[in-house]
Amino acid sequence: MITLSRGLNPHETAWAEPVVAGRPPFALLHGSPSYINVLDALGAWEAVGALRDRTGVAACASFKHTSPAGIALGRPFAPGDETFHDRGPLPDDPLGRAVVRARHTAPKCSYGDFVAVSEPVTAAQAPLFANAIGVIAPDFAPETLADLSRFHHGRFILMRGHRAEERAAGGVRTRESVETAGLRLTRSAAPLLGFAGGTHPECGTPGSPDDLAVAVAAVRHAQSNAMAFVVDGATIGIGMGQQNRLDCTRLAAARARTWQRRRHPDVLGLGFREGVGPAERAVWRARLAEGDLTPSVRAEFARVLPDPRDADREPDWTTTPPLSGVTLAADNHFPFVEVVEIAARLGVTQLVTPAGSTGADALRDACDAHGMSWIVTGERFFRH
Image (cartoon, rainbow, N blue to C red; front, side):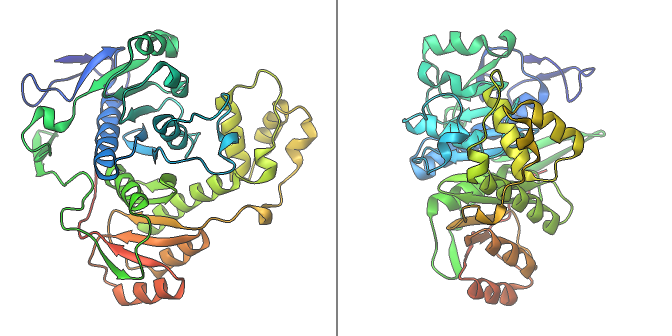
């Protein structure tokens, strides 16, 4: 049994123990995780393991409050990515690329996040986890453990993850349980990427299978309702936890639009006063890209710029580089053609949903009209 630092709130006590004695999902190497830290670690660890198995590529997941803030494969960087990373040259190894791309999906969310990686962490990669609260990985180089343990004022959480096949026959969770209000609820657990029944196109030609896998991993592990935009093996916008799918789509689309605007020349070229750290620079770029800065925020923005007058200059967003080849996945079917129309504005060419939409004919027609393929996975991925 592991005594946790807190429950959901600081005044609550909490602990964790393996379902099968002697077969925990991780070994705690350093730090004292909270209840939420453990949930984030386990969700992220499942996601990167499933992606690594399916794609064969190094994967990283950044989780915050039990949902992914960003998930990425270690694919090559695209032009403009160098300014997303203010800690020197971009890493040239697959794991380093996955970490930078995942944690820069939404820098406002990936701050104090829990990070999972599919590969052992080396000393060269340690700086990439600055401003996180913990990491779960298959292993760590000895010197890396010492380096990382000093992060977060010595409270950084380090876990060595155990793969499912090391804990149970078959390597797949068969059930999940939760106790609440005097009742234990138990359900059979879905496959981690939901492809047990395969996939098939409703219309069009399937796009990138790796982007499909990343998008499904994001919605599979996000709080329902969930929608995820993905391009080049990395999430660019995730929306979750809304009571209707249109709000969820608009949240994901707004985050994808912010990601896109962060590549605008005026955002990439922002200069900052000396002493403004990498994490703060990333957040300010995101806030500028979001737009609608209030007077107090704009005044604060002016204080971090070499020329305060630059805080009042609004970029011409019509010159933002366009998005293309984007995949959008949903954790459930939807009957709204509006979702397809929103997706088309953001360069989506591949839509991924479970089967069973009540408006299938209208959706098929909308996808055809926008040159979009529609891929059906056959399984719903609700998570609560």
